[in-house]
Image (cartoon, rainbow, N blue to C red; front, side, top):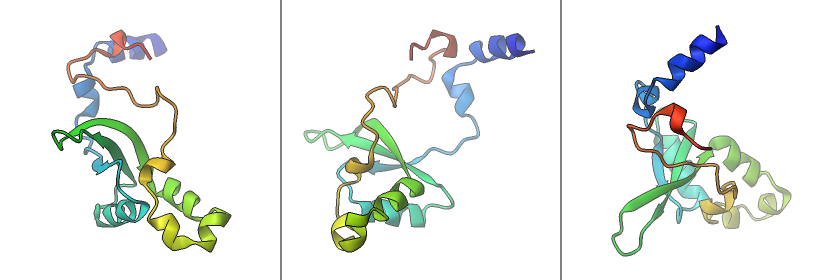
Length: 119
């Protein structure tokens, strides 16, 4: 049964795995925690945002550097140092909440095959 599932999964393209799933709302890495909270509040039930680095020259979104959820934000705001200075915490950059693992986000083309991924 598991072998059949693996073969079926390997035959799909990345775009097939994304069908029917709404994209995460993007947020520039330079945004503040308050910006992220505002965007999460406006998004219709999305619990997470994708954080993107922006190239300064072109001013265009270039690549995803991580994902932030409401849980990440709440845990950060509940730290003792942030509880004593909430305005500083809300104005801190969202990039401080990102996981620093370099392999956490992998950029893929939509026609990539799952079986060819090297993680």
